[in-house]
Length: 280
Image (cartoon, rainbow, N blue to C red; front, side, top):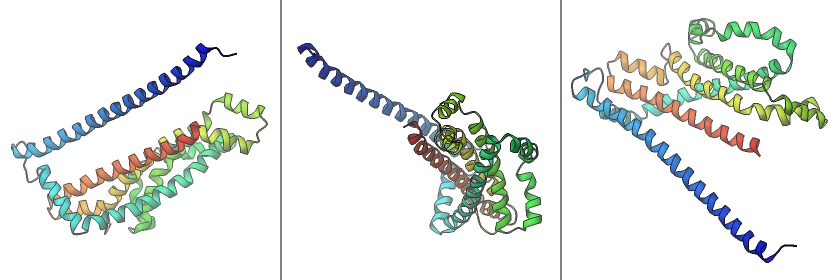
């Protein structure tokens, strides 16, 4: 039977717990804010170095214009629609190639990790292709598929496929054996075991491969667009360089950086969304 002391102390404990949780949230907020501030400081310092190195004559300003000149060129390209058109073309190609690569790689990785005979047959040839750089095969894709959209999307699929495949294999194959034994004790079927135990446990590892694939999609596509494209950020870089539009060239290069950062942060946010239900 609760005593008067218990009735007094229980609300006090709840109050203290809420206060402690509030202090923890505030501390976490300021920690994240400090991390963000230091990151922004690093970017500002880099921009200042870029701005003043050409001004002081340490680098020829024609070959490396000051940062504000590049920003002015970037804004002019944005206003006249040139940047939007070419970024849109690159995003469509990268999005299609990335989506196809991930869609193909995850089921293939699951089958290879889940069934040993399939793994023994497929891993050796896959290792051969995995160790062949995507850009080294660009001439092959161009010869077979032409210089149009198909070859560019295909090279992105190739570049995205293997990071997701290998991380899917690793994620599925390294699931905690205790979880599998627990599923067997509960009488779960193999399909239910995979759906409720194996795949949720492998999600973080799979998303590591997806993030790598997202970066690879942008990098490989830009390189492919440098050759035989009529639109895209890579085409824009090549066009500006050949016509000695140096500030515009750096503006296009800066755009590729922004695209890569945007893709990376978007995939991290998507991973957190999936991990939320996994933890629950």
